[in-house]
Length: 189
Image (cartoon, rainbow, N blue to C red):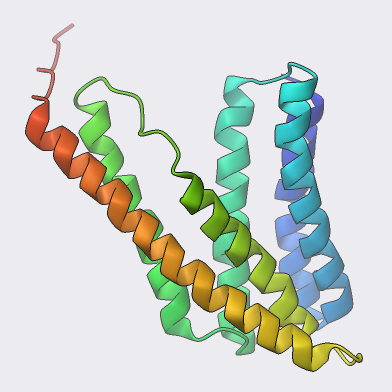
């Protein structure tokens, strides 16, 4: 599936180790910042182009969210290591995703697709993905470093709160499905 959106997702995937090297080894915060911004732009573009060019694919539907989560987890880990984000914030964010991963089995056992996306969750993800570059911008030596720290911190707090709230909503949906719809018996082959 060599499509423009899939190529963008692969490029983003290849950017993960480069980002970690820039941030943790070289302490090249400006380049790491630029790479985070480029990742966000290509994340936006791959979805738009998939629809615009009619290049949606099963691979893209799996690869894009995987790369999103990988970027979020690795960036959080690197920020914790550098002292830019408290460890407990990273635990809350990753813990929410782990809990939601477990709820997917409820749908799978009932031969149901995963729940529809809650757009508030997309807003929370956007806030978190925006907070991280701003927090990094707050570490750079430039005129807006104080603004970067403050704005990034505010986005991190808001994004975390809404991210957790949407996690509660998704978990509630899974519990409702588990109570209302019986599991499909396993088929023997």
